[in-house]
Image 1 (cartoon, rainbow, N blue to C red):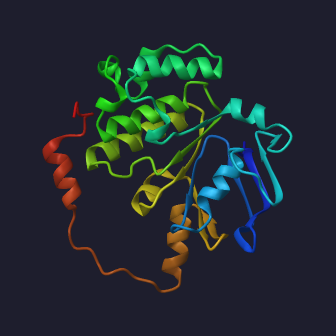
Image 2: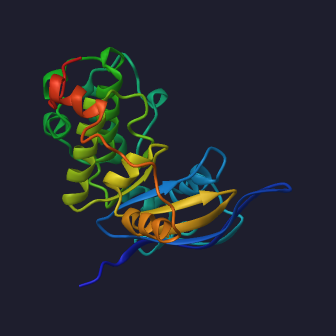
Length: 254
């Protein structure tokens, strides 16, 4: 049975005066997929996502999330999505357990803090304050907070930026587990290897428009079919492979 779209974007436009940041964008995101929105800085990715998340008003077009209209049913949409917060969104002196209880209260849901922390490998840090966490631990915790209200869809904005290779690979596995648990994941990243490894499909944006949309493998095949050929790789492993082999793949206490 084919997957159904949970996000439908049609002819989306966003203008700021004479400047048009998003220029008639249309795409769908299917249930239980990892969908990547890629593009250089200023391409319109963030604006597009913030409109879908009901955080920014559109100028034209239509957007539905799980069948709900972003203009008429924004509050209901907020109840079924999870949005990754940046570091500034947390109270740095509260412990992780206290923060999860706080967010659960804001969502008006019951949440077991230890269960949430266990999902992201942070149960041993339950008494730690947010400001005491390493960069990788903060990223893991940010994903935990997106799951508190058991959302149908989560939005992750460059979740592995600044992480070391171990933390990055482990976070990939965590994102896959979230998807396999039934949650649709929408992700932005500047790391093309990350998008290739994680995403079921990607949309590439440039100057406010989508210029390509397909699975990573299909897009690569299309490029190769034009005669493009990379400089041949003779090494069977990379320096990152060496690093991971030497230092291990487990979550680090950091």
